[in-house]
Image (tube, rainbow, N blue to C red; front, side, top):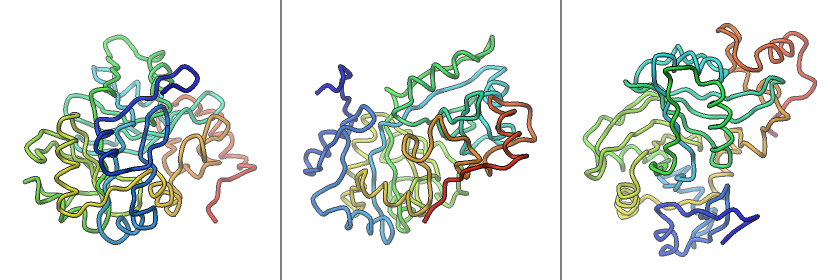
Length: 287
């Protein structure tokens, strides 16, 4: 399948979705499940009341390391990366000089550098944007094709996932651990896009297929993009391309809480600082 000459990609779990009779749709360059036969309502309540599992392998992942990695991230992102300790994660965004949002993202501080997760539709755009600012001695690598990702979300997610790993899953929000799940080395992150207790598991293609199958066997309900969108809307979590884009700055988007104006200047700093002084003429609100 092709759209505008761009091939639609498939995640490692594509065959699993087809076996589950998922309704598949093109999304951000990937063929993704929008819902499963039990329906969107069932998937939604599985996350709010039990545990659901999402394939989010379409997301993009970069590695940034080297002696000036922190300097680079402080320049291109709006949150204060220097506050991160190893094992912590941070929600942030990148902006253009006029304050418009390039993308929102998550940064993980690892022992050997930083791991960044970006939106699927923006992978190449984000990589090119960051790459123009990479200083000597710092490496930026796109490893999106090497990483698969599932999100296990819901009030029963910790109990269910604990059956397949020996790490302590009582973890602070926005923290992560290197772990073994279903016999595979993975990264388990205490993050999610639903507002519920949950975990995101970064793994190889082989690992994610096994993890997906094993968690479903013990009660995790597969959930698609439609349920995910309802869940994130209820939490007022932004979706790039819908709620935020290059025409909206972080203050207008209600993201002032991740905008650090007391660190060294980042790209878009002057425009955002000026708006903070005079006030925004518009504001994204939930209703």
